[in-house]
Image (cartoon, rainbow, N blue to C red; front, side, top):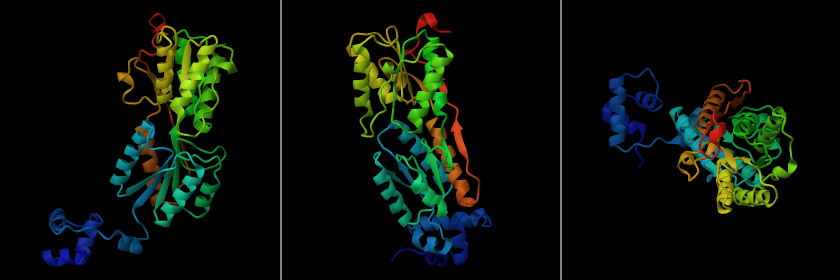
Length: 339
């Protein structure tokens, strides 16, 4: 039979209430008693009955997280920070991938809520906020991350993607690039806003925008690096660019491989910059310049936002856009233009 709190209480000669308070981390139990209870619980291999606790408290102390992919390093870093912060707040996490499919995302939301999870954190691949409007109407706490829906008021944590595009393009201009291409990502707010930032930087510098230097938005098939290969090959068919801003680092790495295979030099012939600042960027053959959108901070801020909502469901919505920062490495660092 499973060990219960009553078993621990009888073994120590204390009340069940005392054991219960220790397990729920109440502060009115002395450190000596707390230590004895926890030691006995470990000795007896006690496991709390979360189902029974949820019936009493109305909470499962579990949070669902849905991201478009578990393969991209950006989401892996966000998930690590989310999990760590939520665990510190007393919550376990259940992680699901939508595989960039809105139908799978909606089914995952329904499945997680069927388990009576307390809240959700979602990087949505949907083009419509309809499902999240339902969550609002039902009073389900949730936080959107990375991508948001324009004109839909909800808690959001991400980066200022317009600033990402602007900063990346301004850096290439400062390095002497005048024919700057952009390999776009998916057509969500992340891709759209980075493209808008790219165009704004060109305009501010007096450089003409050339649509032939911009790839189409990627399709949601999980093969963005393959699409980046194709986009870079297309850019090399005509007069090549002298600088390329890629939507993210994996796409930049793929594009740089095409350029290297063509016998061109990085950054002398074509300078590159991506976005992510992944941990392995500095170890590449041509260490990659990148715009850091602070993935760990996104995870921490999203988790703390949800924890706030779980304490106060009436709290006002917040749109948190972190400011990105430039990380310069040799893929874009032209010596004659370095400051």
